[in-house]
Every structure is written in C-alpha cells, then in structure tokens.
Image (cartoon, rainbow, N blue to C red; front, side, top):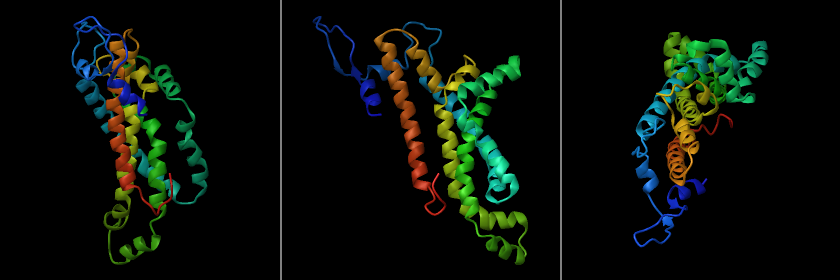
Length: 250
C-alpha cells in the first residue's frame, strides 16, 4: 500500500530539464495536474467533482444501508426459524461479483438506468451484509431484562428504544455507517456499468486516467488513488476507534 503514495510523488518517466538532461525523482506535479485539463479531454474529471459525487453517493448509501440493515439485524438477532432462511439470503451479495449486480441492473431496468439513484442502490446491496454483521452482535448483546424493566416502569416502546437500545447501539451504528461509507467510496465494478458520464466517482476517475496512454495520466491515476486511500483510511480508523470490544468480532 505504501507503494501507491510513493509512486504518486515520484517521476519515473524521462523528463528533459532546462539543460536537456533526463530528470527523475520527487515531484508533486501529478497532484497539481489533477486540477488542470491541459489536453482539453472530454473525459477530464476535476477531483473536487469526483470527490463530491463519491461523497454524495456514499451518504445516500449510508442512509439506505441503515434503513434496511436495522430491521434485518433485529430479525437475525433473535434465534428463530426465520433466521436460518434470512441469514444466507442477506449474505448473498458477499458471494457475488459487483459486476454481476451491475449487469443485473442493466438487464432488469434498461433505459430507466438514466437515473443516478441506481448507483447508491447498487452500493447499498454491496454494503448491506457488512452493516448487518456489525449491528447484529450489538443487538444480540442487549439484555432483554433491561427492556422489560423499562416497560414495567411505564416506558413506551419508543422510550425503551431511546433509553435502552440506542445508547448501546450508537457506537455500532457509527461503525456500520462507516463500513457502508467506505464500501461506497471504493466500489468500482457496479459503478462502472451504472454511473452516468456527468457523475463520475473517484474510482471511475482513476479508471479514466489509466485508460489513457502516457506517464502523466498514470501519475494522475496514482495521485487520485492516493486521495481515495486517505479517505478510506480515515474511515477505517474511525471504525477501530468505535469498535465494540464486547459484542464479538466481525
């Protein structure tokens, strides 16, 4: 992983200096060139735009993943016959390729894919198993006697959730949200098939740089990938900070 930021700051291709000699070594030109479209390319993606698109998709993915993940995690937290059916069904996206999900969207919805909403929906399918696996142990760790005691004291179901469940689930919720956020940031397979040209994400921008010849484009791809790695690393550090130590491992 260290080779990525090192390569983004290293000029390996020949570059003639003022005296005509070949120059190699440290450079920040690749990061500067991310903000310049010198060749007037139609596929140029400003890094701010790509980052904004990625963050927007990631935010929607977090909302959808939690909205679907909480009911599923509640259903799986209680040992019932339904759990034996739901558990492998919900985990299916882990065993399937994101490209396969993207192709399924194309076959199923066709021209309706012009809507940008399909990208966060696909990201949600990929992230949902991680969200459920994060929430489920925390839900299972809540003693039922605490809820019964709160109900005996006259608390409504919402008040029970607010005073008993939520304080225990708050850290797990943040961890699950961070998982969904990072999965959405780095997702490429389904995004490549579903995204619209005017709404590229950071991985799509990296692919566009790599698809063009030349050392400059390759260096810009490394610089953009380093920015993605920094965003993802920050999110993972948040997960490690908030991870529950007494609710089982992921």
